[in-house]
Amino acid sequence: MKPEVLAPLPVVLPLLMAAFLAAAGKHLPRWLADALALLTSGAAALLCGVLLFASRENPLVYWFGGWFPRGNLAIGISFVIDPIGAGLGAMTGVLSVAGLVFSARYFDTLGAMFHVLLLIFLAALCGFGLTGDFFNLFVFFELMSASAVALCGYKSEEPCPVQGALNFGITNTLGAFLVLTGIALLYGKTGALNMAQMARGLGTARDGLVLVAFAFVTCGFLVKAAAVPFHFWLADAHAVAPTPVCILFSGVMVEAGLYAVARVYGAVFVVPLGSHDARLRLLLVGMGALTAVVGGLMCFVQRHLKRLLAFSTISHMGVMLCGFGLLSGRGLAGAAVYALGHGAVKGSLFLCAGVLLHRYRTVDELALRGRGRRLRVLGCMFILGGLGLAGLPPFGTYLGESAIDEAAKAAGYAWLAMLFLAVSVLTGGAVLRATGRIFAGWGPAREEVPGIGGETTEPPETPKSRTIPASMLGAAVGLLLAGLAVGLFPALRHGAEAAAGRMLNAEGQAARVLDGVPLPPAGVEPSEPLGKSALHGLLSSVGATLLAEVTLFRERLLPKAVREGLKQSLGVALRGLRELHSGHVGDYVTWLTLGVAGFGGLCALLLR
Image (cartoon, rainbow, N blue to C red; front, side, top):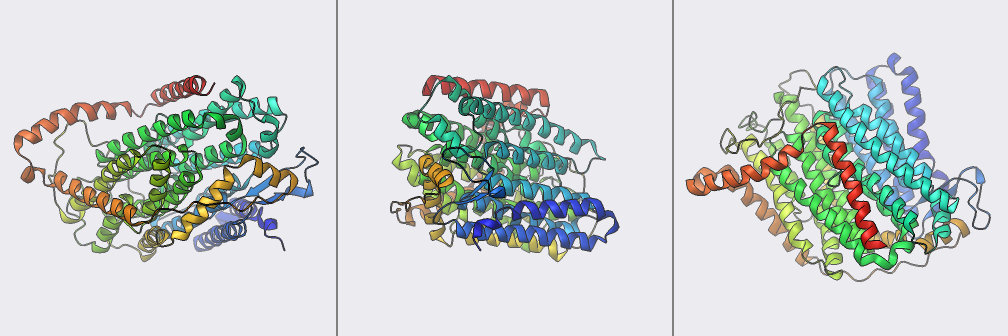
């Protein structure tokens, strides 16, 4: 049996099980609904893993209904399976399993509709990563968004989740309209929706229509990726979504937005825009750097743990956007490996925050001060998670960043290594600061800088309990170990570089999809020894630890005059940044509009 015949199953199985649970779930005992959803998620992850393994040498192509292309004309709908897209589906399945295991004892009452929405989300992400048709990419994008909005507002009896879901839904719907408009423009020009046929129809044409379509599609997907200035919805959604849902949002959903940008660029736009690589690289890397810095600063000034972790996701998305923005196979591969390690570690930290909410009814860092002294295992997990975000070897974040650093150096962007060091120190230091305050009682019990700290209200999601179920802690431990294991296999980076090189080969992809011609073996340049990258990871981990220590013990370590000076200067700067994140959807739409106009204008200026 050819492995490509398995391609529809990661989408079909979750959808069928979702339909069954929607119809019969209220008549089933909860343990059975949990077991069925868990088995389906595990099966989808396993199938995507098989497809990933089978597509190592060449993308797999599956034509639904046997409607194969005739010449350059794609008659039917195809799935084009590559390791990165299949890896996205596998990661979604793994995080879904972890979320379901965690939620089995987390929610007191959990209707089958939670399982239905989660399985629909899983099916949409798998289809999103496997499809070779541009319009179906949009369809899966919308199916993912619809289920994600419903999951975000799952606690609909409370006003905050409804507001967060509304902000999420409106901004992401506008992003979807941008994508759909870009698809319509390309369809009008090429008469095709299959990405391979669309690439052949465009050829080397780079007129105004192509630039507008590129700007619309890229901005639309970057809304989902939460790149600045399209990022405002993310922290609001994470703050109100159920904890098991947050691991999907941060672990795969925002990464899916960046994956879509890379997939569409490599399949459709790389030839028309290839002669302006240097200018496009400047635009994308600049946007990624801004995202990394803004996310890191906002992360460090939060005291609401879920918002803190959400802003760290924005910062790390900036690192991944820089990796793709370098427009090289090595940079894209580094972003993919980084996403894998980040998704596992961040998922574990969100589950750890959920354990604190379950045990102490709050995720406010100040309210939790010293209350976690007896939870030594959980404290150790927070420490390891913070160091993982800082890039400590052998976490997957370190392995991915090593590839991005090498690609940046080759492209003349060596300064990115220092930027990554700074944002790793900020995001890792924020987690370690919260760890010291919660689990050791260190640091002042109040904030000295007015206007900093963020929203602290977080209604409990579970009945009050003095015990922590093993399933909740086990799911968090499993994800943390997975993030640690990623960096233990340097061959993973080599395979990702080969897959990324094929993804950026538009002509080879078109020949593979439309003509059935295998791609030539992907050449991967020798990488530098990992010793330097390991030293970089150790340095960022030490820096994060020192930053947390200085923040917690500032009254002892810093003279009063220095503290007052920092209080005044940081208070003004960070309060202004904080006020931009107003929580009002009208403000977010305004920033989204300005961002699209600015990105489009820069495309016209740099790429014409």
